[in-house]
Length: 156
Image (cartoon, rainbow, N blue to C red; front, side, top):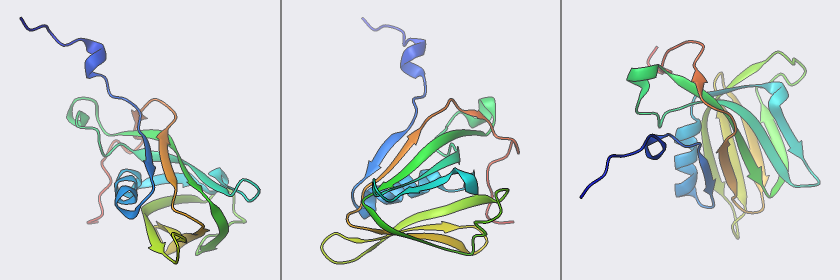
C-alpha cells in the first residue's frame, strides 16, 4: 500500500555545500552566479585565515519559480585557509558599492595550494591565496521574492 507524500517531504531545504576540489567548486560557482552583495558585507579574518561574503544569492536551483516568482536568499560564501587577499577594480572606500558575483574558480598551485578567484561584474575581482581549497556556501535566511522579480539574464 502506498501513502500520500506529506508537505514536509516536499519542502525546499537551504543549501549547505562544501568544495574541496575544482569539480565541487564548479557547483558552488553555478549556484552563487549573479549573487549581489554590498561591499560592507565582505570580511577577511587574517588570524582565522578565513574570508567571507554575505550574498544575496539568486536561487538557480528553484524549480517552482513559475508558481511563486524569482527568489533570492541570503547565503554565506566562506573560503578557509586564506593566506592573502587581493582585489582589483573595486572601490573599497565607497560603502555604498554593490558588487555582483559572476563566478568562483580555483587556480591550482603546488601541493594543493593555489588561488580562489571571485570574478565580479564590471571587470572587478578578488583573488585569495589559499593553502588548500576549502569553500562553503550556506543559505542563512528564508528565500524572498527577488526585488527585480526577474531571472538574471546575461544576453542583454
